[in-house]
Image 1 (cartoon, rainbow, N blue to C red):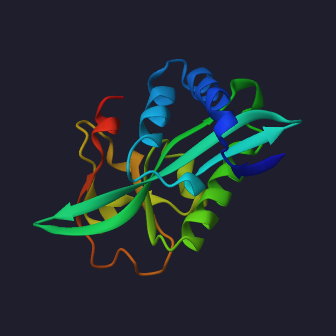
Image 2 (cartoon, helix red, strand yellow):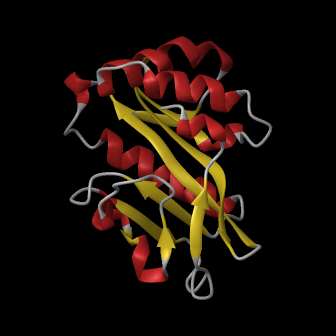
Length: 171
């Protein structure tokens, strides 16, 4: 398996991976729309290849945590997808680990994720409420909205609501 930065000729395969993994087109469309956003960082969109076939994708996107006029830059991990036939083989873990390494190397200090409470803690994610960081989405269980520090202490003085670009609200 190879994890690498996405390339232009990967776009269709990335959309298909997201569509099949989620059983709908919303996440694939989200990736397409975020690629056109001014804040898109191409180094933070990674694919996993097995025998030359793209079987997984992960995207980290810059967002802000906002509180009373103060803003803190962070990343959102969303979406992360692996084709159903390739799940439970370590591909998602490899994508997350490589993505977190790339994010840290690019100077990002933290990441938030809305996802499975049983899955993401193994990578260091904890409930975002530990830092008084909240999701803007309604009815999100506390344990499903998580954050992690890429730099120790980077969230110590941070609180507020994560502000996602409009594209996330269309999913």
